[in-house]
Image (cartoon, helix red, strand yellow):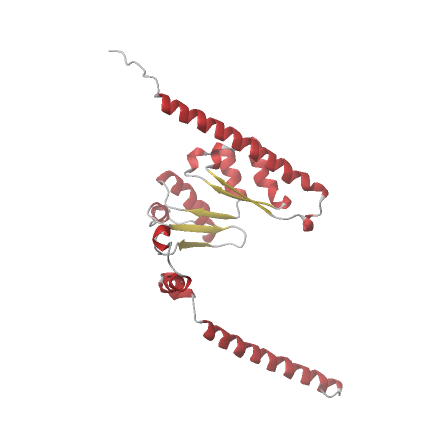
Length: 231
């Protein structure tokens, strides 16, 4: 019995048509933004205002010219934030350009194939002789929810971070400012990094007084060497 292909439901065809129209519109807008960024050549680099562009599912809008945007947009003060699901969505040339040019890269829980690439991409600079990669590959595969690994290509280093354990937005709709601050303080990041304002002010005063005494001592010594009385 020969299989007979069935036509797609009408609502599915309409959704595909809408998605195609949205992708086309997004590509046109992206091309206009790129042209506007590259038109800043007649403006001094120090006078170019930074422009932030966020693109979700950017593989739907990426063209060949997108590679030149990644390589050159930084000097035109165009800051890109790109989000997508997995590397297989990207052509090889675009993927290579992203891994080379993106200064900050965030990896959430990803597939085996992506982990195999990104574990070596993010951790290879740490080792002169790369170890067996299986443990690191599995770490990226098994990241807990709302946890990601951040690679900083600008300053160097790789860290794992996690979002705050707070109530859902609709549950906090009537939460007051003090109550919200209390939840943040009670969270893991609050316990590790937050301190009372009075303690920070006391530490600041102690450091300031110490620095002031050092400056006064150096001024007195300099005046004594010159035979002058310190002011």
